Image (cartoon, rainbow, N blue to C red; front, top):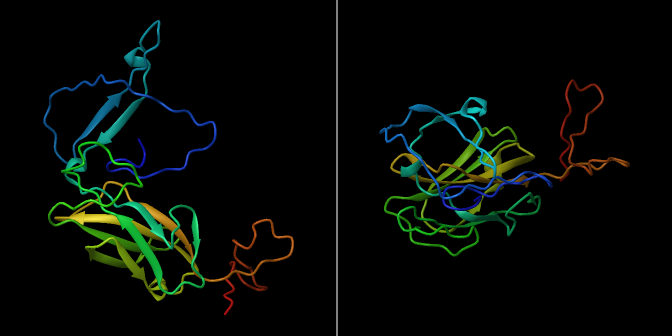
Amino acid sequence: ARGCLDTVPQAHAAGAAIVFFDDISNSDFEIRTAGNSVAVRLLTVTGSDTLDISEAPEDQVTFANRAIRPLRPANAQLGGVGYGTLDAVLLDPIPATWSRRNRLTELDPLAWTAADVALEAGQTTTLKLTDEAGAVVHTYSGLAGTSFDINPADFGTLSTGYVVFDSERDGFAAWQTHRIHVLLAARLLLSGDEQAGTDHLALSGDEAGGVLTLS
């Protein structure tokens, strides 16, 4: 399930297929370590037959210390917004909030919006500020609480970006992270613009589209 344990909520298109697994699991009983790769084939079962293994697509799975990694923060929000884009043009600071999770005590998966729990020893929260391509421009690490005020100036000259919510313990980061898009500077809305001002303004003579910041 998305948003449970070490996963985060994901957007799914209308009409997307959902695959359900039963309680049957199998193992080759081999001990594997981080960096090992194995080939996996899933065999679908219908009322009449089971897919032949030669017809099943093969996936390569690489082990990456998933079981030992700390759980990601849950119910992550910026200014009360948990998904999509936060208009932070007039916000200074930008308030970030989240709920903490503990891999050692979460025996039954908690809902994404469930209350905060006590962390396992040594676990902290990390917030990363990135550009649109995911390049990190600033990091707040070692956060022990459930809230933090982000300084918009730490985005540098970016007009848009992301805040990424992560966890860290003993050098291990969370398996998945949740990120929220942030609008940091106003954009010029051109009459008839179908994109409602979310695109860049190309100035005459520019080789590439520029960004017009209003102040």
